[in-house]
Length: 435
Ligand SMILES: Nc1ncnc2c1ncn2[C@@H]1O[C@H](COP(=O)(O)OP(=O)(O)O)[C@@H](O)[C@H]1O
Ligand SMILES: [Mg+2]
Image 1 (cartoon, rainbow, N blue to C red):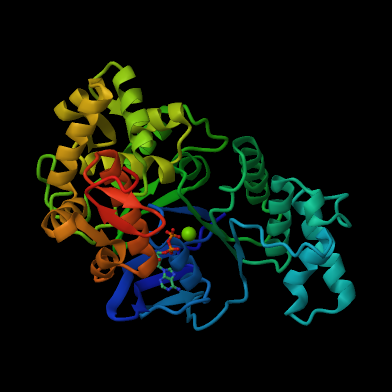
Image 2: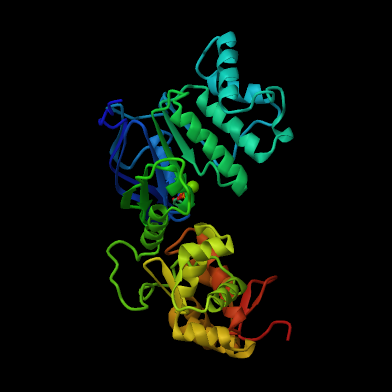
């Protein structure tokens, strides 16, 4: 087979920003250039909140770029595109419709005669392995079978391109594996018209097991940080040394400092301000993680191995490593993590010493906590309402993001006994309100 090297989809210099009240626009995608070719499966990987879904929606014509353009078969995309189907993480099935009716729904908008609709829906159901479940209702089906309905609904329009937004992440590991393999069989046997699959995942292993090419996005704003080819034939084994190396490389790329950031020892987070999006991680998650590192009994631990051992995907792992990096209890470099000197002292200490050290590090490295503490120190009565801080943080973040960040800072500060917080009144103080 000759491969047509003209891209089916071309994303050219796409920027996307969202308008915000009282603040400058939030730039989510910056100068994205991606081409999608025939007969390839491409994975898009990036941290949670970096803009993966936004990019997918833009490709599908469900949202327009702020600047730049998207071409589908050489023509500009201005709205929803025929020939392109989406599969979502949440299966989005209508509970009052049967499997068959849910699948037919994909064709409803297309004004196809009823008999033809039925015929095509039955075929899609057959292809994706849902035979015998035509008249079942979604609630009778397992998660894996429900997502098969999601796939059938995408396939029924006989798309050229399948866009998938974390399609396997709501499923348990075995079910996800099973569905992925079935999809791969469909793809290899060319049982559908699909020419190209583009999917979003935060699961690095999934990307290397499934994709021919992997695009790694950075965050704030998302730029294409790297494109990697996976030149390993299927069926792939996740212990394959080429794949392990690739997994390592992707971890390295994803834990690198922001594009343009300077390398300063221990100082990836030196420049953070009170509007920095502190990762939503509680202290026991951090200490649990540090204990695992200590138990590893070697200096440098491979992050992919650790993720596997702890059964954490990157969306759970990276916030923890980031919090610990901000606090200078670990160093992350080239996909390896290691305890810093003070990280070692912290984890070997008793509870009171841990709190003391945590408090010192918070005051040194987390500007928001330092700010709250200073305000409380200066205030007569040593009290302040949380709203006062929220307003300040909202100079940088949306209201809901500001609330999350403040609650993280409060959680960490309370553990360190730097201040107290009364949940009912929203007051911060230096004294324990109950005491
Ligand atoms: N409609 C919208 N309005 C404002 N901000 C949005 C909108 N959609 C997404 N965002 C913001 O864009 C960023 C990227 O979101 P998203 O594409 O959902 O990330 P991902 O899929 O990588 O987790 C987030 O900061 C999110 O809050
Ligand atoms: Mg998303």
